[in-house]
Image (cartoon, rainbow, N blue to C red; front, top):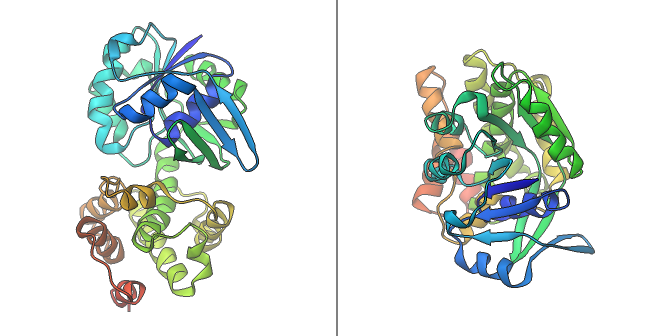
Length: 313
């Protein structure tokens, strides 16, 4: 079996390493130093004190990708349009799977890929690049794949590919609920860790940071509720968010890493989407708006948490 993964960042490399145990994996991306490192030495996956080496093909030339059995998209949301066009080029009656952050990627992908070949999912796995050619598994999680009438036969094949690689995989008939559940978590954790330049765990160590995190989560939940979506942890949002932070306490969120590198972030697909949907359904999202603007303008201060809290009180 051959699998193409569009992306060369942390999540793409993490999945490439794991899937290389059951398939020939080809990475397609634009990060040239990372691609050269993988071409030269292969890909290394670390977790705590263990390291494994994986033979993975990497290229920035789409013509180097052979016919594959599955295409996995793991790029930032602002790169989805380009990835969709690349997936269309590679697509030959094979399944295209996305496990990206944010809301709305599937709409972009459906402009290029027919519904009977598109599987939208989400994952709570965490990973980060520690050096060129080296990816760290910084937080264990699961994969949830969205079932639709068009792909009900193929989705089990996709799920089993991940299961054979050791992933915990579940299938849901309502992926929209699940995507919003992840958005609640991402909107509460990612922008704050980016602004503070702290690991996730700091958000439950600092009482004010924790209050702001909970407020962000409740704002996003209220937007989801206004759309008629069912959130499984609606009755214990604070406890659920705290549990996620505890489990990923040593992890730097992807937005934190992007912000530190002065790279583009996924703030538009996370807080930006909360704000847009909030306006559409007449739900106030002042704290999401405040942190959104902080990320966009990169403004900071010594008392940044107090500044954010003042928008609440």
